[in-house]
Image 1: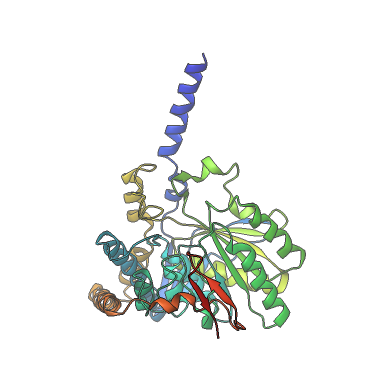
Image 2: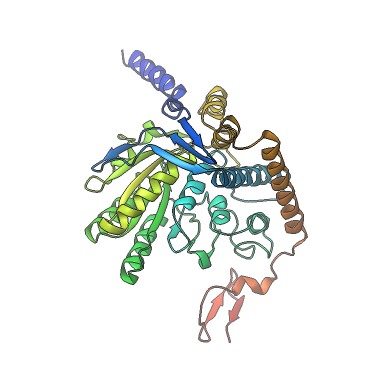
Length: 395
């Protein structure tokens, strides 16, 4: 009897695993209402909310905005695909977590916020660096460990950083960025400049205790913080329903309001973040869940096809791809010709190829660079290396 029960349970789990991406497939593209001049009006997919009224699902965008979104989305996609190729060619080593498929989240976020707002995210951070004003060269060079990288070649994939635009980096420890994000929100509140902090994490990190501690502190002090769960439906190789009793992550704040958004639609994301910022500045923290999807595996060691079907991935590419959605909005509504978008793609490819060549030509950091960037004012301190006799004394 026990064996039969165990077999039935395994069969049940297997069936559920095959449909783990069903939630991600339920949404299609939103619908176009009309075009007046160069302004498109569209209806995005409905928002699910917790303790708050939803924003309007009717959104507008100009031709210029849509063209910029297309360029940004395509640049991020091309950069990540190039990183994949460089990794397989062994030009990139170590950890590498790609963002292709999820690009609409960061592009929509940046369309709604500004660089006075702070962002801190997980180790899937390449696209965040670029959208915070960084360059493709800085990302590729950092991945290759070269001095022209975002962190001078010393951080690698998980540690992009751009302080001048309030991007406080990727974090290698799962969920560790969330309490830091609450601290950034405290700084915004203290300064009284009207900015917000965005603390981004994945569904795989959503069960971390420190996230709930951060929720509590932020709500207790009414901090202007937007907690963002990028739900790509798989934490490494584990489907959300196998790790979370309640995978409705936007409700996890309990006493805090929350909202679920179509994270594959840049216009829906832009609307959600604009609404969330207005709320957070006036009232305190809010949780946003971005319903998104990653095309690659969790990291380069994960083929991404053992816990989900290739048909699932293909279906989402066909039904919800963020780049193709913007392409359709532009072409189907007469705002741009297909040739115009092909020209943008060609320009972006040339930019990426140029960044790769420049990164390859850049030098590796010199050995003394290992000791830099640790103390702002070292005051004559000494650091020890791996060997006890390997020491460096600061002036």
